[in-house]
Image (cartoon, rainbow, N blue to C red; front, side):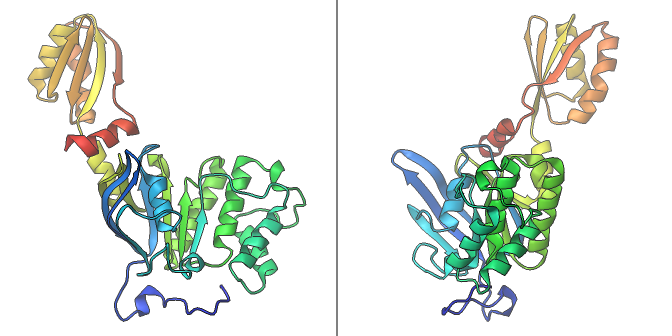
Length: 322
């Protein structure tokens, strides 16, 4: 733990008045004409919370606001009730692994993480660095410099320096990028252990499957706004319940469209030659019904594929379509 002359806040469950670990209230962030974050409000407590959104959605900007690297244009951000821009205790409570590469290339991993420990005022920085490197499954005896490391190894070095001072809050921007499947499983397990131990872990990701494996509370960020929040299962149901567009190429597209409309499983159909653009809210039932419908009208199906089965379309729907 940090050796500091300032008293660290008590764990959340021992405070007289519970204070959110991270609190965002009516926050907007402008960069000239660009609105990066727009009127966002939420609290984050112990456990793992994922910021899910497409690239450019405003996730990294929110993380910079949490960590005091930027100030909000409107609204307030608090960490344990403190201003991350003005309170010098906040950095001691927080570990940060940014998406950007910010490593000293000519250092070994052990020396780099030990430097981070010293900057945080950790007593026994060498021992703390070895423990952190062990936790991320790197070799403390490795004498190679970071410049020789792969992307996955660099990600683990960044995590090691973020946890070396045993922070209450971990803020990780796209931490699973570049990791192989085994490394991903290991890092996800480590993040879950931190969350289960009463720490606050905030992870940004644009990959739905990563968030599912973390099993976290999810904040969906799209176009700088909070589009949805809940546990993963609630978000998955919300995404699956949206209208889906499916493209069907058929020899008798008009007859097939009429037959499918009769089933009640599609809400609209647009015809363009032998191409049929269909919208449905029940992909499973539609998939089971389309072949019998084609047989009934003596139509062949040459192609059937989703037209909007990607996260960008999901986030568009969550922001604009509800």
